[in-house]
Length: 115
Image 1 (tube, rainbow, N blue to C red):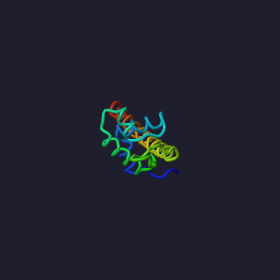
Image 2 (tube, rainbow, N blue to C red):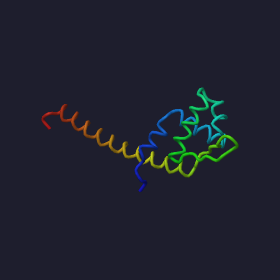
Image 3 (tube, rainbow, N blue to C red):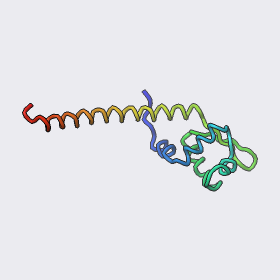
Image 4 (cartoon, one colour):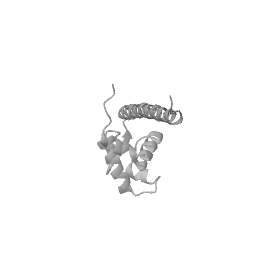
């Protein structure tokens, strides 16, 4: 069974800018905060802060590159995170199916009170 997803990971992948950074890194390979900020409508400092969050939850790794750091996606950790998110999604799908059955049962009872 997949371990429960951490709140920190939820927070990291819940931010649209961090998802966009992951997309850029996956599409183009390793990059620095400076090179990533050139492709985004935010400052280098903002990108660097988002990358620190992604690094803290293990979705990216950083290696020194001169005065900067090069970030790349940790694909194994990303796969684990995706599996955890899929598990959470499947659990919610099951809950919603149960809620739907209960609602349908209530509606049937309301429409056919003599049954």
